[in-house]
Amino acid sequence: MSDIETTTVSEEGYGCSSQVGDFDMSIDATGETGPDPNSALVATYASCFLPAFRVGGQQRGEEDLGKIQIDSSADLDEDDDLTAIRFDIHVEADLSDDELDEIVERAEDICHVHSALREGLHADITVHGGAF
Image (cartoon, rainbow, N blue to C red; front, top):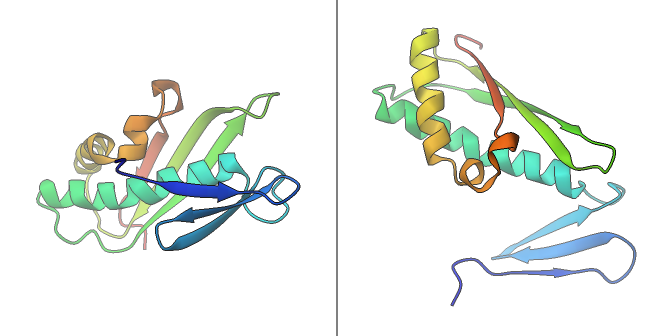
């Protein structure tokens, strides 16, 4: 038995509906009825990295990072393949650059999506402490 099982269906066109556990998710290759697959991947990456960042902070003795926001951006080539991903992370806690770098390093080890992506697509990360 697999650890993760999903079902994805398309009745017509390029839009798909996926059943992921108890949740429905719509993705459309054209971006008309839902996010396109590349955008969904970038959002999933950020959604995995943010809690990994929080856990990384806790493991580095920073129990309360406060509000965290990741602004993601990505580049596509002429074939619409992802070529670069960037995270601009805003953290409420006012930490030094060295402290933030340590948390990022730990978060990279924890984030499952980061581990699943080829190295060339690992996010280029900039962190801003004391952001809110």
